[in-house]
Length: 119
Image 1: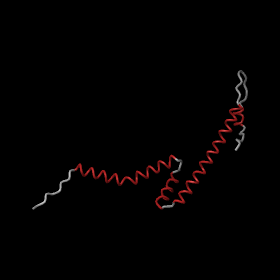
Image 2: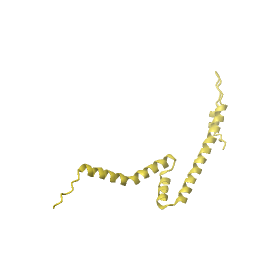
Image 3: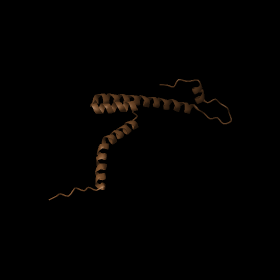
Image 4: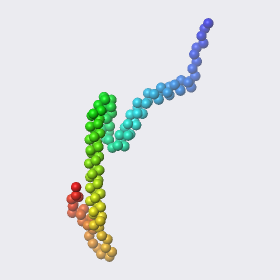
């Protein structure tokens, strides 16, 4: 008895190809999500590349050290911003608006004088 050849419709082949492509794309999709999340956290492209290499090589301690350095940098910037807010707030409080009189503005004077902002 002669067997009939197996007939597979093109639609079925395309369905399975899409599934295979989707499976192959998963690592790239995961990597893209990782990169976007790292960017949102303020990591530079170089830092992201290092983190990806650490992940591939299983260097958790090095990854942690890089992230701790990033955290220290962010905390330092945050402290700088806090000092800037305080200094500018004090300058704003010193400004007085006097109607009809031309007076110098303490804020502008402080900036012109290059007054050192308290650290």
